[in-house]
Image (cartoon, rainbow, N blue to C red; front, side, top):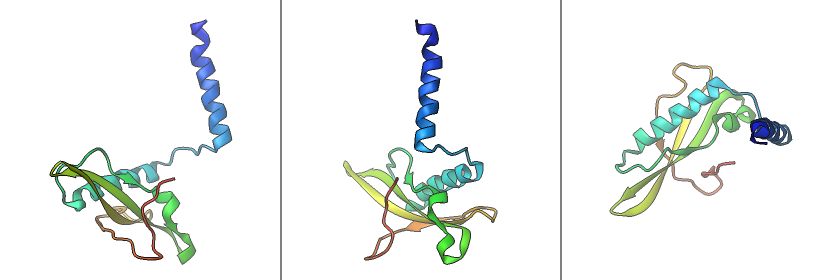
Length: 121
């Protein structure tokens, strides 16, 4: 009975992927995501960081509509604890998939009316 469980779970995962539209792994996007998580935490300049920063997917934030198909602007939310209070700082990371390094820093982001704010899909 349990011998077929891995096969059944694999079939369920495959069907879920087919229905939801899973994409093939994108090593360049994974690299960019890792870098923006690392740099947003570093550049937030806060102590007491909790977990890994939540970041928008770089491939979903391309500036194609502005004529820059390889440039992205992702916002990351860095969670930290200060004086026993949970806080966060939003960081904006601009990068270019056609350059090396893909990005070199992030900066504090304060959204203004009508501009991007932190959201994750």
